[in-house]
Image (cartoon, rainbow, N blue to C red; front, side):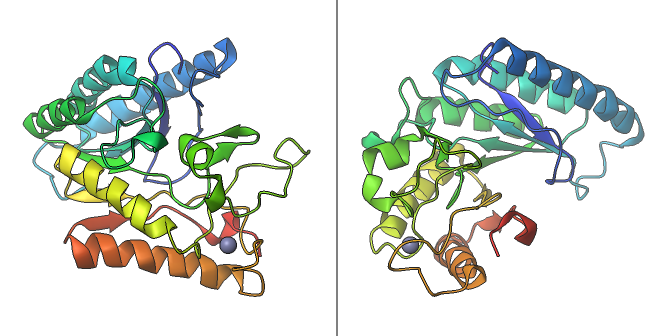
Length: 258
Ligand SMILES: [Zn+2]
């Protein structure tokens, strides 16, 4: 939402109404829709909260929220407090490029939150008994149609399909190439920074709605399922094999091209 910089996804880590914001390119309509979505969620969540005993820490009750610019940090703090009141115990915070990365400053959106903000959110969440999980949206969702995210703006060489017109009817989001020889080294630095800043025990790699795959010369001829699986395995190896963090993948085959 442009008013708070936050937008919401909720419901068992799966599909609920999605309110997307891309930088400042949000409309009053999207703000209203987001507000109504959050209101609906709060209403449902409150009813669930009344039934959810606080002594059930193994039960995951969560919400997925998209982070905006640094100005959204106070709203994120308020969200954590409200979530705690509703007896939620997990929040996935889709940070992506809205973070001032030290390792690759060029892939950060302007006016992004920093590590100090993340530490403060992490401490508040911990004090409230909430697992705060940072997310970097991987592979797909690197643009909203022609509105390109910071990573591909800074590194257009990673674009899986630079020859496709993102303003063409039916085009959804750009992807990065999972076979580019330099992509993993860069994004693993971003993963590591987010994990450290949020003191995270879990990490969310997104990967939903990947509609552009198998397009470039490196990937052409390889089944999309194999390309997708390679990306999952690469990220898993780094996050779980390399750091011991738990990885939460959110993607479905139905949102991939066949
Ligand atoms: Zn490729």
